[in-house]
Amino acid sequence: MVFNFTIPEPGQDRRVKDMIIDILGFEWPLTLIQLYNKITKNYSCATSYQSVYKSINELCSEGVILKNDKLYSINLAWIEKLKDFSNHIESNYKNKDKIPLIEGILKAKTENNVTVLTFNSTLEMDKAWLNIKKDYYNNLKEPGEVTFWEGNHCWWLLIYPEAEYEEMDRLKFKKVKHFFINHSNSLLDKYAKKFYDNMNMPFKISNRKVESDIGVFGDTIMQVSLPLEIRDKIEEIYSKAKNPSEVNIHDFIKKVLTKETSISLILTKNKEIAEQLKQKVLREFN
Image: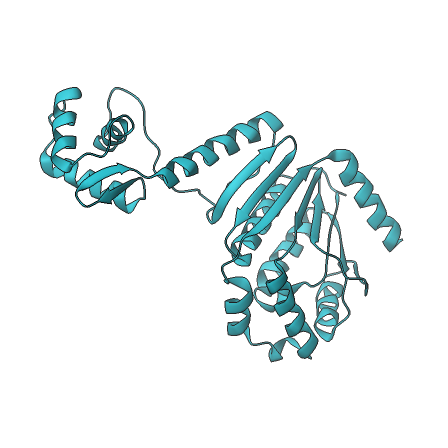
């Protein structure tokens, strides 16, 4: 998924937008006419007043600059976004990762081998989870890789089972040995077991609740702890519904998936720990 935002383009053939950002980076706030005068004087640019006006409006709509009364200045939130993007790319290259920075992220922080991606909803977090896994599996070269998921409920089957079906097909095509450990035994959890059983995916049910969902693939450990309010709502749904058709999907989307809440996805790169977790899962299934 592309991370879309305006980035200055250095060079001799500068755009009007870049000139505006350059000027406001050292002098602010300025009016439209002040910006126009500085562009034509400082950059010897034969641009029109209308062109500067259009560029300013576009920068405002893109969240790069802010307008207060008739004065313009750079949006600090845009600077933070640009900084996060730069830090993330630097971290990827230094750690030889290929972790995408995905739209919907509130902030991203990397320290040593741990990356924390913070989102504003469960839906945005789950899209990142899916994209990171998809990128890993698409680039997997050797067959026989062991991966697994462990958590309380496979709730995504209630909303987009077709996406999960496609992913399971991808794993079978790549000859991945993927395992599921589901720490709940409701009727909906048994429905999930039937779903994965039909796809020949090893699925084990346990009654011991866990605090977070964990996914392990390669040397990456991906972990998320859902906010208590979201967890409680999911538990309420799973305790009442006898089959997926009884789940109010609109209610689930509103009160679980898209409800605004801060939720962090933690990615840890540690080959030794990842291997230990895989061996533990293999022993459970053997």
